[in-house]
Figure 1 (tube, protein in one colour):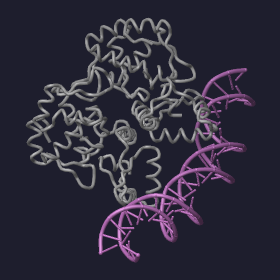
Figure 2 (tube, chains in turn brown, red, purple, green; figure 1 turned 60 degrees about the vertical axis):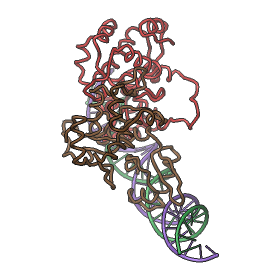
Figure 3 (tube, each protein chain N blue to C red; figure 1 turned 180 degrees about the vertical axis):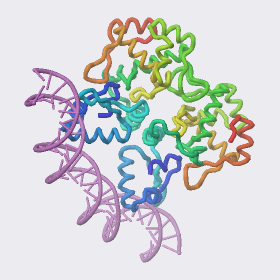
Figure 4 (cartoon, chains in turn cyan, yellow, red, blue; figure 1 turned 90 degrees about the vertical axis):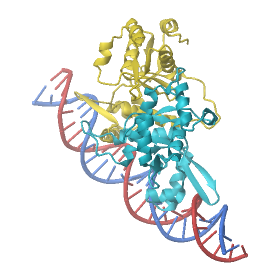
Length: 208
Length: 208
DNA sequence: TTCATATTTTGATGATAATCGAAGCGTGGC
DNA sequence: GCCACGCTTCGATTATCATCAAAATATGAA
């Protein structure tokens, strides 16, 4: 249930029960417990009860657990890259190979830099804002969000950080809106469109 | 058991059983399971079996879980700072208020900077090496270790990163050797000596 | 109002896991 | 060679947990 919620979509109690392979009554018990322990938040809309991760801390703990859970035996190289490894969502931003490459490009081009006051957060540079404006992302919209602007979020498959926070979320939305990427309706996987391949290579030197 | 191992010290099976409040036979079963799932590593020395965390991934997952587990209810400010909050060890490096302030100072003074190739690791600058040399830490000794040089490690009490990796471990050793800090034998807590208070203020502008 | 749908609660059952004492197995000391 | 010690394995007991069907609750639709 929790892993399925990592994509940022809230789901109803019955949906999550089906995903977990249990009856709704069983699922309901589990979700109540998860809510008590502040791992999920519920949002009631009519007769539907939507469950979503409580916040980035929960998402981070899950990803950290996946790192230890999925660690291959020593000296064993990983399997063939599936669509999930190429690009997927993590909570509300991009992860996988695409997410990590974007993170690298952003730091390499000095579009963002680690905040000198500590806290492990990134600040966007003036050059970065210029580039973001070209994508239709304005400083105001990011500053309005009551959350960290950007921070490195550890990627469980790449084992390297991708961009989390308000910036990461805005980039995901922008990419979706430009139809560079498309969500898989049934999973966290994200596919890169042909337009996406073309423009990502041009703007970010990211080739797929 | 796992939390007690976060200080980086390996412990014997019976020690861990006592900590957990169970008989050695019960503890042994748990430790075997933890070993199977690659959360702990064992090191056999004669008739003593020492158990320690398997690596930084396990430590990171534990700290991430503590963040969600210990998250106070919304709008509630934390309790009085105990010795653990002031300074403690995390795996094999310093954490708590001291660890976080050091991290801030290192980035602020540009003694280390985020590696532009990505990976969320820090590189030590030439100015940083000069400062480290004054502490008796040489580049060779850090490069020899087969581990990441330095990376931001999330602190569960401060919720901000401190310095992990080979650099973090070397700093802890150097501070201990200079008797700036002293280990509490029974916990992860670390106390700051009067000499430490004086020299830390002088060298790092860190006042306690 | 009445019915259908989504969800939770309750209560009973069965599966699973934790626990401990006793016994077995290495290792070090004498 | 013998014993003491630390640790693990085994077997049996007990507690706990997950699970589901049925009933209850709540919402929306007809």
